[in-house]
Amino acid sequence: MPDGAEMRERPAAFILHGGPGGDHSGFKPGFSPLAERMQLVYVDHRGQGRSAKGDPETYTLDENVEDLEALRQHLGLGPIVSIGTSYGGMVSMAHAARYPEAVSHLVLVVTAAHSGFVQRAQEIVAERGTPEQQAMCQRLWDGTLTTVEDLKQYYAVMGPLYAVRHDEAAAAPGRARTLHEPAALNRAFRPGGFLREGFDLRPELSRITAKTLILAGRHDWICAPEFSEEIHRLIPGSDLRVFERSSHSIRVDEPQAMMDAIKGFIVY
Image (cartoon, rainbow, N blue to C red; front, side, top):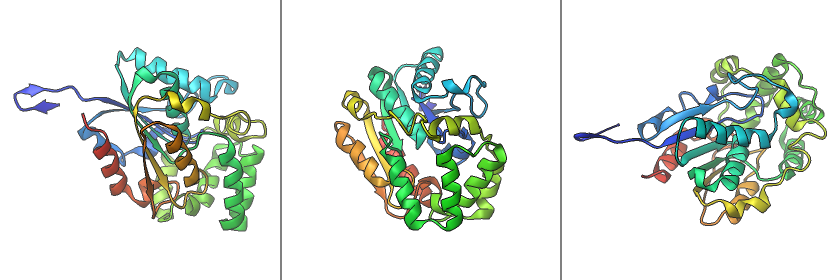
């Protein structure tokens, strides 16, 4: 980027989407302002979005971590800024723990470090959800959201829980743009799925050396804020900010405050 009479290299930031089963398109144009300070690389996880398909049994967090490191090395990059949202935060977190020298700054947005978030989400839906939302979530836990149309309907029904300021007219075009992948979602959330059994990053978090910012939504139903608070306690020197007027989609509920927090954190 221009810096007076010189050109200065900007840090590379990898943007990791959630789901699993979504893609990066939901972060555009919301994350675009970060391009003023960083070179943004939007990553679609293995088998999702515009990444190549493969055996769904390989659509796991461990494989996603190795894919992320392979991409960093393929691009010839030094330490990156890693910004992961929801499931993307789980991948970013594990990558930063397993490859600490590869990450300079870590931003974890509405995420969790172990499978306990699923049981808590089930409790919250039972407390707050409409009967239609409760029934739709049961399909998520049962692994029966098997078509693209199923996933579009899931996000349409669940929208008011994902965002305090949910606006169906504004949300519908984004759902239409997203390349949904049911196989990836079910690999994670079906009975026996990798986010249901054996998922626990807590023993690894002390290995993270990257400067870390954790963002949580006070009203988040699926990655409740107590899971961000737990991550904050386990990552040495990390910062935590809880957005009081947000649910899981901070970028919908408090977009400017979220961008300000990230920009203020990533200073070179």
